[in-house]
Length: 88
Image (cartoon, rainbow, N blue to C red; front, side, top):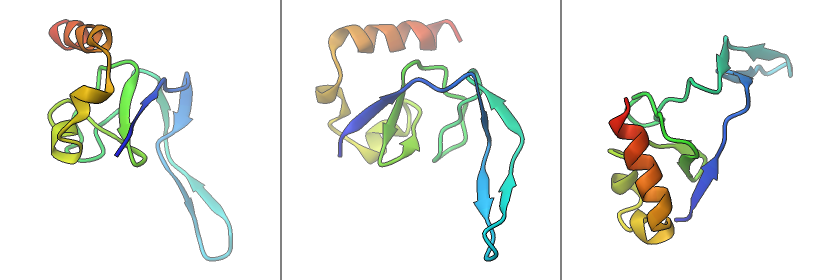
């Protein structure tokens, strides 16, 4: 599976559900600082956010889904992520 790198927009809805009549139900607004792991619900401070198959993943869950993830990112990006994790 390929890792995509995502920079969240300034604001976005937390969810959008479409009912059987085609009406949208839109969740609360999130900021670009609010990104949560789709597996464990942990806060993800990493920018860009690692995404696999449409799921945002923290560094604890990323190896569970993509064991060879480190081959897909540059050493510089790993360093950036380590720095971001250390500042949290």
